[in-house]
Length: 286
Image (cartoon, rainbow, N blue to C red; front, side, top):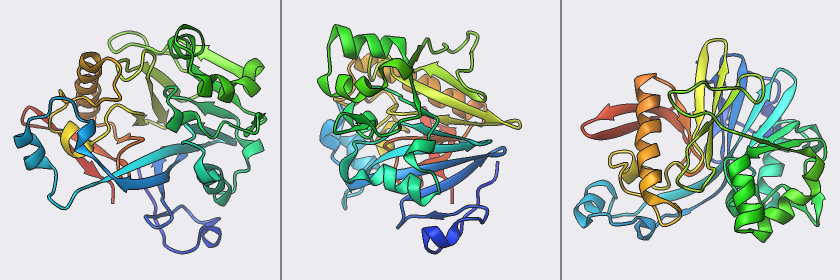
């Protein structure tokens, strides 16, 4: 894998290999021949109050006295003429849509939107005023997630966001570690990472022998949850299950040397995982 970076105005950068700029909140990572863009929707001060049962000694060890940042991200994949969005942010200010436009992709040219799970900061840009923001896209999400949030325990925001895509919503059964994994789109494989929500899904992207994992909300406070993956967040609906799959996914990434990108990891939100002690270390790309 190879990443490319250059500074300057977004429009001025079009047509070159790629770029990354923290001020723009966009980072390009190459996965084989694919261009994977990490898009920051928002960044704010983080709070350790969302961690469950964290020992104060652990907090003191890993969280700087000056505090830390919390990010909300989405990913755009440019794949051989197709444009694929993974999650859409909250929709606040139209930031994600403006960022994909800055990359030369109009909303009508988005072919697919993959949803990791149905929390509001992941589907919020799907619709505006009851109309599909991505009118030519198919929406992909796990059948278990769709069933839970639209029928079992209805999330009205999720139902409203999906409504304009009723005939273009594709549900699937994500694969399980240790079992056969099946692509839903060329080079894109969903893997079950349940716990954060009943159908939370991560996506493995593969091209030309290179792999990359978009891990969704596998973790929320990277500074703590990489070294101590047993600590979950209040947002995790099944905290023990979330902790178990967190360790499993991070071990998978570390053992197989597969870079990851997360929705709540701060810029560049892309990097490599390695085993360190009883936990893991995350090394961001530069």
